[in-house]
Length: 239
Figure: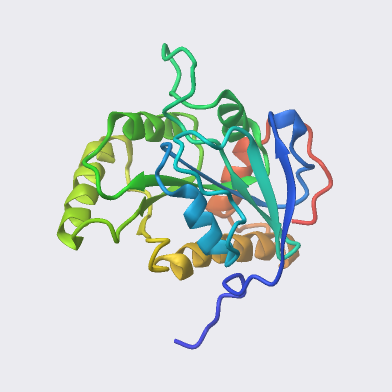
């Protein structure tokens, strides 16, 4: 198969800003793809791998290091969003997932959020905090895929066993399970596959906005998700 994904070769990466809350985020003129996971899941290393730029996201051994919503503009046409990890936030658990309130507000109300990459440590059996977060995403109709990280740390059989166990735990919440991917920032595994997911989403958005409109055609799943997520007045968007 000769097709190349245009997004894989990232030509530019610009740090947009660090936002303490949703109101401080940039305008909604570009599609956004957010990454979030339990503290110390390897999120920063993965983001650096995807961008092909060492030091894009700061790697720290301190759990919960990321406190702000960090936003990067990629190829001048989409944004990568680094959300604070969950598990160490000091907020009440009653009726809430245990993660940063700014992240919760962003995930629920950011109208140009296209997809969330929910990161899970592949070396661990299903953790209640991860299951709690996935259920939170499902209940709020936030579109997401699952990414199992650090596959280089444990035997392949362990990775597959943990993924299967996780899938079994969450399966009652879905008619069809979300897409699942594996990755290792250390050995570079999974980069192409994850960037291809972003490429596919952007291609669908571009097709919706620039292609001929057929009155009888049903809107794509991506369009339905974006329409459902609109809770604030529309802004002028190029997509």
